[in-house]
Amino acid sequence: MKQALDATARGLRTFVSDVVDGFFEITHNSFALLGLAIVFAVLALAARPDLRQTGEEQLMGWLQSRKPAPEATDLEPTAIDRTTAASPHVLPKPQAAVAYWLSKKYRVAAEPLSVLVAEAFELGKKTKLDPTLILAIMAVESSFNPFAQSQVGAQGLMQVMTRVHGEKYESAGGTLTAFDPVTNMRVGVKVLQECIARAGSLEGGLRYYVGAANLADDGGYAGKVLAEHERLRQVAAGRTPPTTTPAPATRANPVQVVAPPAAPKRAEPDPQVALLGDS
Image (cartoon, rainbow, N blue to C red; front, side, top):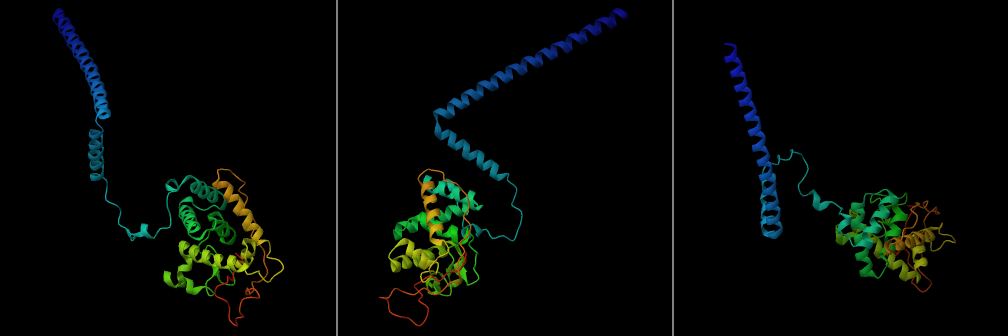
């Protein structure tokens, strides 16, 4: 009886050992076959880009079909059309550098700044103004806050006096568009052009723009804009100036800018001249 039990035990051990050895053999061979299959698949995809593209499309379709439905909200699907933001990666290198530098200095997201930088460069081409000058004015005037408003009513990125230049907003839909960043930029650039043409120089135009043409001192405004302008030019050229944010210019209460002696007198405010308050 004992011999029979011993023989049965040895038979079971042999059976189990054979099963384990067979399992490891099959597993080993399966991994080897799987590895070979992967190698052949990689080679096939490398040799046939069309197969790779088809496979990627099928995989993406499979993943999208299993993607959970978006949670129901009150947000409109067209909101992206109203968003003033873009990836800095789509900008040319000089513009992207300016956007990132301004983002770091003024603590504003690089994505909305990318739209403003691109628009400034486009306006610069059309108006023959240096785009970094346009950006420097926005920096000094509002620190890139599109909803900024001064005590005397200067509004938006470039702190344009809406009540003086309201007609410039009519084609865009009215004076409320002063708070649309791109529209405010376009109107501000028009005002800046007129101020420079009236003064005959950039620095003089900046004094007109800030409403200090008839004052002995512009509170350092023109100097701050020109200094920021130079820093931005360096950034666009690939250099890295310091990012210290200048203190806002302190100016006296704004006064109506009067045209040069050659210009005719006007009893009412000249709508072609900027009347801007403190940023």
